[in-house]
Length: 277
Image 1 (cartoon, rainbow, N blue to C red):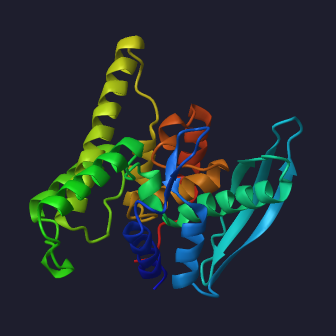
Image 2: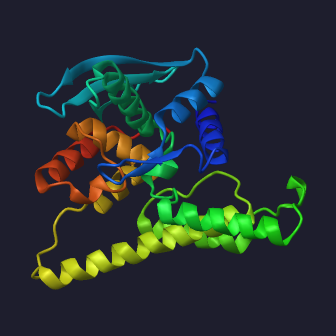
């Protein structure tokens, strides 16, 4: 039931794109607007979710920074992840900065339940992509009469095969949302761009570093845990790893885990009992 509701929240967020997408002016990160995530949660999980603020502070200086740590929960789920959020103090408005930091932390903590995962998988269009899509939509509307929504075709089997293959290359779970052909094409372009960047980084890394002896990798840990039945998909592995190492582990940060954390994670996996059949 909870998984179905998580999917319902993600579908609401997908339908709200691109109006519910924002780009952080300082980091350049593209993500969902915190209020859009909160509204979607309230629509699906009304009275079945919440949060508590663990800590809050304002850093000193002319351009202070509000930092908040919150813990979120879903009804019937024992796991209660925490995360940090931040927001700059502008024009001396500390209250607004605290609220912004709090909602930012809520959004990040909810990502442990795969809520808003399109953002963390890099599937949201950036400013250039949004502008290109907007221009294309305007040209299409001007050149041909609007089609009724019922005539929009669903993504083809071939498009889904491409999406699943690209997600496998990126080591992320494929999306569960039902895309139409236009949405699927946009997702494929975004994933292809990510694969190309990843391959370019790997090539640079291999060229810059001398050959190293075989060592423990997160892929090996994931495989061991999956064979023991501790998880069936990447999201379960990320949640487990985040709990063990005490930080936010996702498809991007898992690649940067240091050897001590990998050793700690492997020991935790080995110590877990295999679930009963």
